[in-house]
Length: 480
Image (cartoon, rainbow, N blue to C red; front, side, top):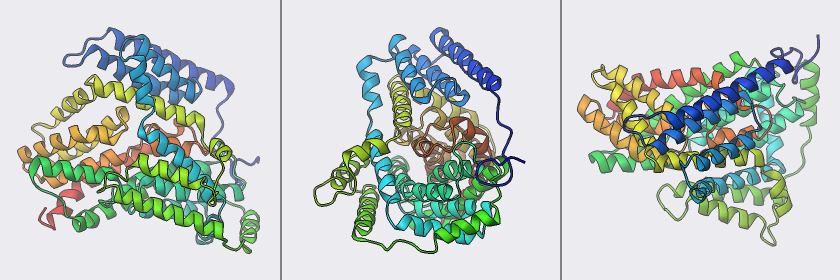
């Protein structure tokens, strides 16, 4: 039996050329129909520009998932559609492309490259492999739970910058082939959504959590105490992460590792290079950057943009020389960079045209008259759906938090529950591959957009059900 990926058992039968071509054609036809619909439909309460932007985003999703065009070209096509249809001006679309997150994305690619060169990465990789005892599912479980837990105390992208190079080290040591390896899919897609989930577990895990708390206080005069958030949020994050692990390892069954291969890999890690000055300097830089990002939740000067710029300058500074400019250029996955920038452009037009606000108000109107638990499930699901169209939490939070908090007061449940619901749905979206963490880890080459939707359904379901049942009970224990 032929081998596939990095183990003995073959993965799912690969799609033939004819199948790929049919899939590409379906994506193209669907995209054309969606763009035409956006140009011709008149939706009550939604501007013509907003309708075009909304349907352009849907067209992009169809092209990305079906792989109809290269990812970057699809992104550039979306920007062109916005300009040609008059939904946005050329200057406005370009301005939307180059957001703060784009600079931070370059910083994350760069730091991942630096960390992968240090003596720490192989040591952590060896620890993960030793824990697994040759069981590929245990590798995935340890990797995702570790990412989730670390992400509770630092920015999601900082956690990914630590764990993604480690995962790549493990996959390369096991000689896993990109795209073909199911273990690679589980680890690289999993690390993105596990980091997003962990970031929701504590108030300091994601700057959006602090924004949600601020908006809650402005709207209702109440808050969620730090300890209450941690006690309630951390178990929910771990539960959802287990759902991520379960979903990935059932849909993309990781290859079983042969005893010979595993023994050979462990032998390679039996003698490791000593930790040198450059390694400690890289680690110190990471720790300082993480500290500044955490402080940025309360001190505006330490924003994502400022920390990214400071970090990039420091890493190439004379005497530091952690990386060269040529290495920075090579470290950035420019296809995914353009893909994410184009999504930023479409979202900017959606916000300016009122499409995002229309979506929020239309969808939240569905919960009126429902029992509280059912309403909470619907609110979580609505938030997830909004993330599909606007995967930028700071843009959605000012609309979603006051709306959900107001509904809480009207329906008789705690505004604190509404706040944490917003934090979880704004911090973690699993089904569509257009959020920054997923786009970043996609640059590893081990998975593509078409691999994301199916594996994201179960974690979304766990969040919807567990969040609606646990958050009111957990916060109620603290009188919130």
